[in-house]
Length: 485
Image (cartoon, rainbow, N blue to C red; front, side, top):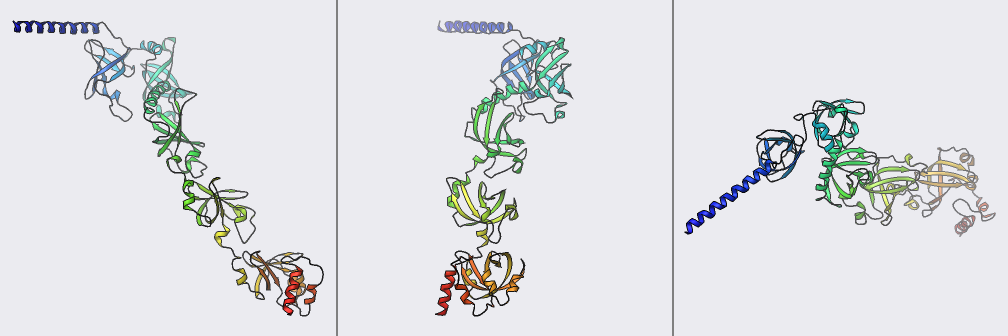
């Protein structure tokens, strides 16, 4: 009895299952598809060359596997994934599907595709004024150059001969006037990629990209195919650069920091601001621990101004050599008389201002101060050879060595045994002089003639306390009195 009941229950279950299956089949049969229809189906099987789709009808759909490969040539779908395709052709046994309508369809589908926003496949056949000619299902269409790509089209010939998917933006005169756009379709794809990309990447993240274009104001970086950001020239390097080409070229793979992501005002995409330099530490952060006032370092001249030269002592850190700090030996009127942009020079750090991020440098301190040790080198009464630098009404400036110049007052020339000898000297002529006084701190040396007339010492004590170039008559008087003692 129990066995009989079990058999009856099993039979009822089988009947119900068959009925459900029949109803399901009948339901599917009622959902007929037509050429050009959009189908959202589920992948039920992946073959070597074909992918099979449950279309929701009695017939399964088939799409070529190669159509579903991504930019890297990889198949990223799996069984159970949902996918949207278009019906290209139908038979009793199968439905041919595609990512876009192609030549396999009929020309009368183009009008419907234009109204429904259905992508169609077309081949670029030539370049004409303002755009391209495109063959779509045997019909000649026009694609404006601005609608061929999301990026600037530099070389139109690169597109000729290639097949792409397009949206029909204008269908008039029974197909005699067709305008298409690839850009609109790419923007939709990019928007999807952007949404997926920025689910993972946020502001502040460090990512990799490829340099695509260089402009005077910065560099464009492709983060993923179709998604670009821009790094302003000020964000390319901690060092000062005039042109992006100095450090980059198209095709370079770079590491960047995402500074800002904001919707674009001109489209549905995003404006992405990037930085290359912020992927490394700010060189100013280590300045205090790396350098001290008085250090002598090597640097590169990066910029000249009317008041001095900027010298880069480490990448991203420039210091200023003021024009007054360029030479001990001559008066510098123009920085380019001493240094040139690109030249590597030695400098001494005079001061570091961390708050203002300023460094003062000196070239002349790095060369050494010729006045250091001058009092020991030029002893009083020593006779030395000099060269006339220039003549003034109050005396002669005589160079003893580069950077060290002494003054022979006119009063001393008049007391020389051969005063005419000094009066006839011209700039550049050599002259024998005697050291009378050295003030190393004030950088002054007083000179006199080695053959002073005897008995004329009283002349220096007469008159007022008129100041000479390097001292007063009063000081000379005191010196003479000490000698008499």
